[in-house]
Length: 408
Image (tube, rainbow, N blue to C red):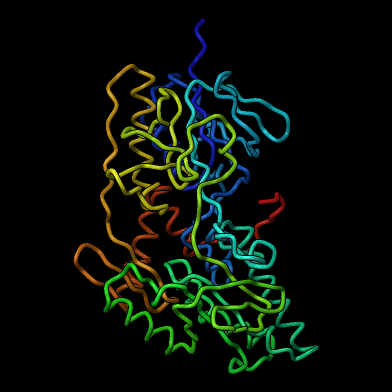
C-alpha cells in the first residue's frame, strides 16, 4: 500500500491557519495527511493584540482555540515548538525530541520584534508580538498602579509607546480607552496619567497622506497623548528612556512597536536567507526548492526588482489560499499559479470610536473608519468560522482568562 503524502505546516498564524483551512476544502478524502504544528493551542488575532495589552477586550476575543477552528478529521493539530528542520532528510525536529517527517512543508512562522540595536530595549521594553507578550503589558500596568499608591512615583503612571506606525498608534488609542477605566478601579485620578508617543520620523504614520497624518495627530492630542516626533531613542533603562537632544522621560513602561523582522529560528536550517527572511519564487516556493513553501512575515516575496511585500496580515491572508492551491498542484503534478498581491487598503484604529485609513484613493477617518476596521476584522472571522464565529466572538465569549504557560 502506498503511504499518503505528508503535508506539514509550521505556524498557525494568519498564513498557516488559512492555508490549512483551504487544504481541507481542496484535498480529496485520503489524498494527503495534513499536520499543523503550533507552539500554543490558540490562534491569536495579531491585529488585535493591542486590546489585550490595554485590557480592552476579553482574552478569548483575541485568542481562539485552534482545535475549534479546524476540522480534526482532515487536519491533525500538534501543539509543539519547532527546534529545527532537516531539509535533506525532510524532517521537522520538535523541542520535545519528537520528529515529524514531511513530503511538503510550509513555513509560516511569522515575525519577531526588531529592536534595531537600541541599548536596553530587549531587556526593558514590552513587545506587542504575541498574546502572551501583550498580556504581560496589561499585568505590568496593573502592577504599576498598585506600586504608585505606595510610593507616588509619577514615572509609574507614565506610559511610553515607541513607534508611530499602525501598531503604535493603535496601542495609544487602546491605552486612551483602557486607562481611564483602570484609574477608576484603582482610585487614581486620570489627570495623573501621562501617555507619550515617540517616533523618530517627523510625524506619526509617515507613510500616509498628509490629511490622515493631521487627523491622527489631532485625535491623539485631543486624547491628551503627548507626541514627540523627529527624535530617535538612544537607550532604555528600567526607570527611564533617553531621546536625542538629552531628553529623558522617567517611565517604568516602554511599549516597543518600531518594526518587525522575520522569525530568526529559520536562519540555520540550511535554507536560503535574504534580508533575514526566506526568499520565495512567484509561486510561494522557497527559492530552488520544489516541496518547501513559505508565506507571511518570515518569507521574502519581491513584488518587483527592488521592493518586497510588507509584513502585514493582509499579505499573509492573500498568500494562504494561493499557497494551498500550489501545494495541491505540486502533489497532483499540475501547473502552479503565481501569487499576485492586491492591496485592499489599510485602516488603523484610534481606540473604539475613531480610526484612520486609506482604501484606494479614498481616505477614511473618524467613526466611519472605526466601523470599517470592525468590518475588516469581522470578515476575517467570517472566513475562519462563518457567522457562528462572529456571533460567538461578539456575544458568547467566555470571560475565563486564557492560561498562558509556554515561553514565547
